[in-house]
Structure formats: C-alpha cells, structure tokens
Length: 413
Image (cartoon, rainbow, N blue to C red; front, side, top):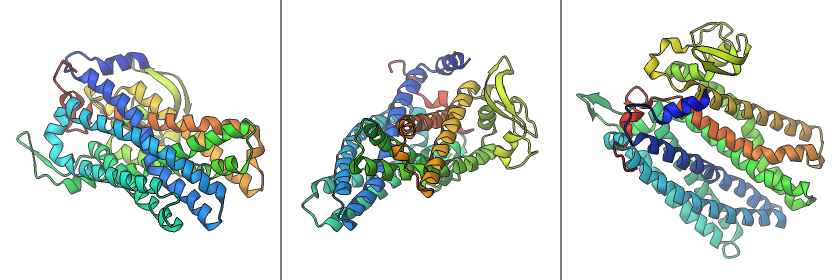
C-alpha cells in the first residue's frame, strides 16, 4: 500500500506534466541538503566548545580537534553551497505557481538567508586562515558570527516552510495576493516551534554523526584522549538534544491537532474521530480498514491533547480529495518517533552512567550502538520532513494553493 500510494502521489491523472519531475528533483535536493544544513547550524557551536577548552586548559588535543573539525566544516559548507544554489534555482523553475504568486510574500526570509550564507562563508574563511596567525581568543571569537549566521539562515528557511503550514501576511482578493506584509509572513504563528524542533534536530544529527566516527575508531583499538574527547563533546550535545526533542515534538503535535487535523489523522492512522483515542503502532490502511497495528488504548488522546478522554480528529472529517497519502505519512511519522525514542533512551543511559561514574567508552556494545546512532539520526530527520511535507498534501500552502497548481506546467522538465 505504501508503494501504491507513492505511485499515486507521483503520477495522478490530470496533474500537470511538471509535477512528477518537480517532486522527484525537489525531494532529492532537499533530502541531501537538509543534512548539510544541520552541520551549518550545529557544528560551529561544537567546534567553539572544543576550541575554548583548548585555550582555557592549554589542551593540545582539543585544539587539534577544533582545527580538524574546521576543515571538515569547510568541505561540508562548500558542498552545501552548491546544493543550496541548486535549490534556489529549483524553487523558481519547478514551482513557478508558488514563487510567481507569493514571491513578494516570501522574498524577505530568502534575502536574509542569502545574507546569512555570506556572513558564515566570510567568517569561516577567517577562522580557517586565522590558525597560528591571530591571537587565540580573537581567533576563537570568529566562530560566534559563524554560529549566529547558521542559526539565522536556518530560521529564515524554516520560516518559509512554517508559512506554508500557517500562511499569513497577505489576503486573497479577486484571485490576487494583496495587503502583503512580509514580516508577518516570516514571523508566522508556527515558526518558533518548528524552528526549535529543527534546531534541536541539527544538534542530534551532527553530534551523533561526529561521535559515531570516534566510536568506530575506538572499536578499532584507538582508545586515546583524541578519540575520547572527539566522542564525548559532540555526544554530550546530541544526548541533551535527544532528551529535549520528544518534548518539542509533543508540543508540535498538539499544535497540529488544532491547525492541520488531516495531517494528525494520517500520523495516527485514525479513520474516524474518536475519544478516547488509541495510539496505533505500525499498521497500514487498506480499503478503509487498518491492518497489522498494535493498538494502545487512550495513548493517542494523551499524545494529542494531554488528556485521557479527548477526541482526536479522524479522516472522516476531511473531504476525500484532501486526504494526504495516509500510509506514507504514517510510516514516516512513526519512523521519526520510533528512532527519536531510541535515541532519547541512549541519551538517558549515557547521562545515568556518567552520574554513577561508569565509563561507557570501555563498553564495546555501547560503542557499537553509538556508531549506528548517527545514521539513525539522519533517518529520523529525513522521516520527519517526509511526514510534515507529505502530510500537508494536496496543499503546498495550506488551504490556499495546491501542489498541482504550484508546479510548473512545462513538460520539458
């Protein structure tokens, strides 16, 4: 059923010829770029902490790590610059119905994102060149504008996506977009929560990806101060993020209950509105019936509304033409939540072990688990974006512009 839904999503009858290639190209480009964007957000902060440790404690190991990570950051930044440039062209070429109609609404965050990109590039260059040429503390401070620029750029991009979920800053009058307020569009009602969710996710991805490299090294016998510090600092960031992230996701889920009930119904595989609502683990929707799901009574109401009895909206309250691809959305959402729960459990074990004085880095099973947490974190982020984007279908701008109308009408793509 998931495969069938995918085919229907990509090639429905009567849709413009540009929709299929637009979806394919945008999914590939965004799926790749989001991982690189995570490094732009989180890596400068992690490098700052290690570099500061090196200066304050006169720790050559920490300084060596900071210098090595800076080179890695530069390579990833260069690749991200290319993939981001591709995306900027794709927005206009593949989605002229969106950018042609709402370009004035969305122009401000895109402009700030471009400015942030240049600021980050400039200070990354200064930081790389400054090794051995600048006073140590001034050199360290060049990481601050890098980190701020990465955060601001991410906020601007997330604000555009949040606007698609919570459109604001304009009115439609006689089919025309009027009374445009780009500031209100940028600071829409959903931006802060969605940005927080993405910002924390970035630290999970980067922290676990970097620490996994050093965990693999320790499994190969390289148990030295370089590998131990290279593991501990990024993993500490990631583990805190992994504990915070489920709480943010819960709050975001409650907001989706109020603003996008069809998406929540697809998340929960809820055919009918019911209260108290169960939580369904696994399962697929086939011919109007849910199969192979493990049902936990009342937990759906608790997650959606913090109540044992609150009703959770079902797909029966949504016109059939406005249903998202239910099985894809459900699978992506549960993949994100399941992986997130596992990563949070690993984080709790890590902090409990440190509190009790246990050295988990001497435990090979923990190191093996740490190696796979990086790819799992990437999969969780990708699944989350699939859930939120596919769950919004058939709309590009919620209740304003359909994805079919946003796509190019050209058959040459």
